[in-house]
Amino acid sequence: MDTTRIWTYDDLARLPDDGKRYEILDGDLVVSPSPTRTHEVVLLRIAYEFQRKLRGRKIAHVFFSRFDTILSSQRVVVPDLTVVRRERQEIVKERGVEGPPDLVIEVTSTRPSLDRVRKFKIYAKAGITEYWLVDPIGKTIEVYVLDDGDYHLIGYYGNGEVARSAMFDVSIAIDAAFADFKL
Image 1 (cartoon, rainbow, N blue to C red):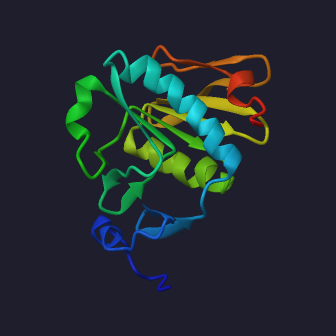
Image 2 (tube, helix red, strand yellow; image 1 turned 135 degrees about the vertical axis):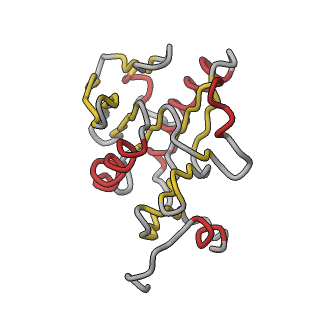
């Protein structure tokens, strides 16, 4: 792959729909493997709570997996969960969220350093107010809030605790989010 090429959203739109997750981070094309089973189960449980409490009450739009967030032509991300308040719903378009959403969540199962370092900086620079990092291995949720251009940790939640959004009336019981999921 040409490492000198600057990728844009238009380039991304021309890629094949091959089931891979493509993102553009500062002009670099990043391809991520499919999520793990644990990633999907934990994400579904968290998404359900956000959907039930926000979308169900018409407070915000909630999107999870495979929905582009277009921060600029050279910054196109696909957060695991994206939330946009109803008052800002004009940024929700057919092709994706065009602008910074109010909250994003990343489940760190496939490439933790991508979410903890690179996306962390991109999301802060874009002005996304709240960022959650969900660690299915450590069974923790970290909640960050943007303050003066930088994220500050406002909560680190583990076994027996309840993670709470700073922006929305949504809470996630850690034990329930990471409970055993055998059939």
